[in-house]
Image (tube, rainbow over all chains, first blue to last red; front, side, top):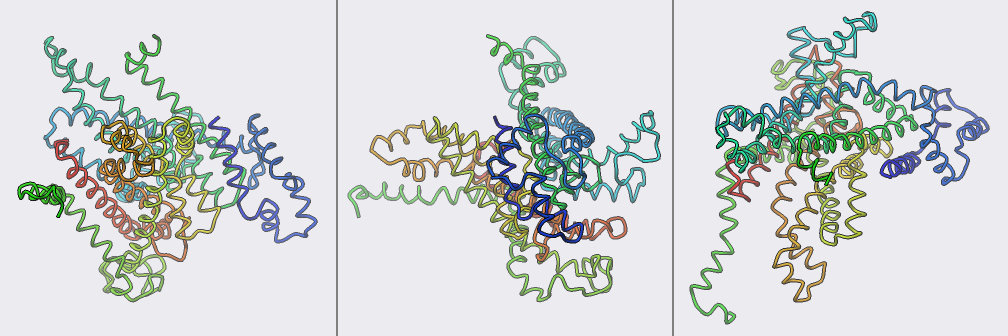
Length: 312
Length: 297
């Protein structure tokens, strides 16, 4: 239902664009006669009434056909599927890293609420929020590429490396490092603050007092009992923010010329490649919905109470 | 004078009650030195933006000296960029675009979010259902991507950029407002207002809204910060008015020369960073001042 709304919205939005495929193609070939323009419009079905165009588009999308890219002259679905892996690699790695390290930072900070590390988390959260992601990325490039010279500047992999070998995978990891660091820095900062707050909440609750009263050590209490509950708000926010992380990936990808959906989206916007833009909006909405479902599943794994409440 | 104020102590008590929250609020705010620092930095930036043509009566797009003059050399405090434009002038003028777009986009975000959130939270039922579906719809689309598409579709002018940012960022405000309205509408004094026959409009604006304001004001500071970051990202990507100098645009123009002239990219970034930092410190200060008990967090 939500996806259908996205499809209709995309179509209406992009039909508002002044100029169409005929203008684009005619512009590229240096002008065309009215006859040729009409012919192109007929080929792409642009001469038919608006509601028929919309219905045709929706029908095609349901069958997995997102149209043909004006620029690449190939099916949009194919184009997107070819670019989706690098984006997912970047986004998922950054997200997982941010959740793990953020939670760890939050837990360490919560053990000494007024300690040095706790203040560090406060500062980190402020800095992480305020730093624009492309600026962080450029600072990391200056540090790691220009000064230390230990990281590659851009791209997914060194094109001379033979594909599929172990060196190839290692080279991808090497190229992945800076984009992931830039992207996760924002979320790592806010998650560590969040994890600290929820950890401190949980540590004051009755069942933690019970666990301590049983004579459990502080490490067991923190990591076996408290962590489970403290991590739930972090997962909630991470799930809710997924579309934002995706947005951040667009910027990070363009900085590092990472060959993913973000770069494709940006370039398609500049080229006026309407079907591709529509396709990417549709795909990203779909990914966000899937992630929201996964978040629900994760709750059940982390918190047994939700599991039994839903089964009852 | 009315009869209720005949006795002196009662009248005195009333005057104290009127003044105290403001004074108390200011005292709590000033106690947070970081919030004060944030306020000072932000005021300085606003001042620079307001009086840019007075302080520096030059065109920020004018080529004044050799390209890529490092900061401090030949009398150019922050150096020059790829086209030999003075970085300091560009930064001062860039503050205008940032604040105008950031401010109006944030205002729009709050207006949309507050309207949708308050109606959904107050009326519940099918109104809530419909409005929350719309909110979900906007939450599913990646905000920056949608803003990029919107700016590209229409003319890349400052109003378009501000509207695009407003359209993609209001969902958080709507959810917060909805939660506050749902909580407050069940409280005694709202029931009292309803029992004396107040209309819905009066209850929403005059009874509930004032009580829902503290979290919304704190959130407004965050909203401004987010709007500034969006503006920076859009102008960095070249999806903003090409004839208006802005911090993101300076970075976008010079990104190819990052390794040879790093200051052209890092300095405008510092400006964005400091502005957003100042705004969020102000937000923290407001939060502390509104909820003195939460200070320990």
